Length: 237
Image (cartoon, one colour):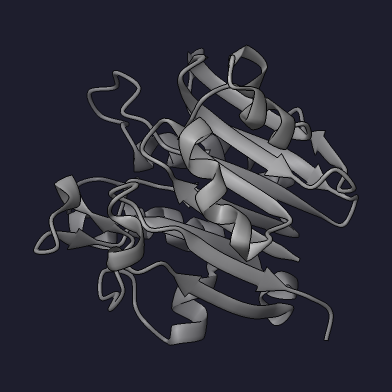
């Protein structure tokens, strides 16, 4: 199975064709339009098997799959102490494993923006995360940890590890969080401002099934987005 996660930087209706040569089975796309409210016929046709969440029709989080793949939305909670966190899209893939799409937001929170949103989501749903693939734009890296904050990037990584979930890129490349050698974002599309903020995390079982994980290169993708897609492949040995 081939999977792509990518923050497309909007206008996905014009950009989805750039991913088709890879022949992915599943796409986790951040900042994409809601296909159900799009007037772009080709986009609607391509996205005939999808799930989507967002605040407005022009920019949200979508999971798209080939027609033969069963996508079942899971009823995981978004509410933490009467506050809604975003954006998270959990689903079951072919009854084989759970997939959690992620696009963390500031969400008008003075203290719990971005990685804080994921930390809150874990507090609500940690018991449901086991044989799970978590993929998307976390807007976070260990380099931004703060000493007096208990919901840093590193705290989230550690909580996921307690659930048996680890970053596949870091695991397979033997790199530490905050010391990545391959960026996933070039801030404001500037080569001199690279960061690693997009991830695919998986259970031990899924990591063992990993065939390949690659990050797109700037020369190919900067014309479309400030984020690089992550190409992931897994299969039974």
